[in-house]
Length: 245
Image: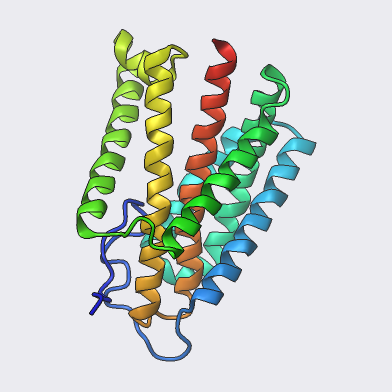
């Protein structure tokens, strides 16, 4: 019989112990409810993107900072997610809108393919999950969690070294370069983000089986949105690198 205890997800928002110690009285989390909340967050994100596009792409920095703060609040106060998750989606929309405008100005026509590819990857991995073409096993979870942690460490190392004035050519090329190494790393990171979608789908299903409270639909949708934002940013960066070659 399939183990219905929530397991670890590669997404740091959807941790293995997310559903532990939560009250299960009253209405409970459902798949349909989580799907509806996910669509709602995407719609709010698009509104935020429209605000940034219409006003100023400079709002992207503010959106990124506010989104990061709201993400932390949501992680530590899950019961607030019906409020903080939509606010996070709005802030991330402002960030992505400005981010996309900047890239579109430098590489005309790049945004639509980036959005299309992100949606295509999401649909493909949803189908992969639903048809069990790739089964989410404990070994897969461990591998994706480790790979995700490696990506975080890679980006943090590059950021810290740049802040202190140290230039490591191979590291800079891997994180921001447009050579073969940079493109290969970018493709690998996109793959890791895509596999995180599998873990997120599985995690949400296990949360439903664990009879999590209704507000966790918002939290689960928030966690899925975090992965989608990451995936879109990486796809956009990959297309930009390809244009620079």
